[in-house]
Image 1 (cartoon, one colour):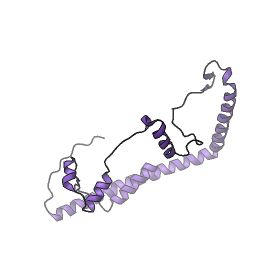
Image 2 (tube, helix red, strand yellow):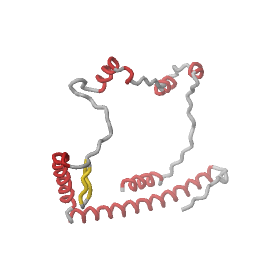
Image 3 (cartoon, one colour):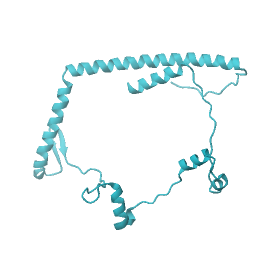
Image 4 (tube, one colour):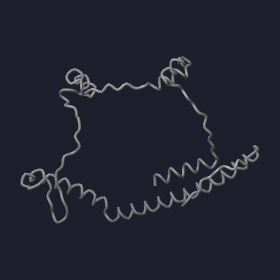
Length: 188
């Protein structure tokens, strides 16, 4: 579907014309919401039917059996891997093996019970591995601005200012239905 770029005609010149345009927007949102809700309901029914058919056909049992087989094969592989020529074992039905995961820094619980404790130890023993990342506390600046305690001149000398733009918004009565339909579609 190709949507042309739209340029406003600037044809609305009165409140009555704006209300007429809102009425049309409401009609459009109602139609769009109806289509989206119908689609979401159809998708939900198809999914329910598939789940029901798969449950009748034994899917839960197959998933349980699969998980058990994977654990059994893994247990065997842990014992047998020393006899493998490589870290991967080829079979007529697929491959299995061992590979290194992504390296991670983890706690040694008997030394440091939390990362907070570990940070203090690293500061003392390996200070080169502690980040010092200063950042501007924007929340504090905005709070001071709200409380009228912010020194705007000093803030400006720092190259900063508090800015708040007014934004146009529009909500038709049907747009709530449209939002609900969109949420249902995303969940479907």
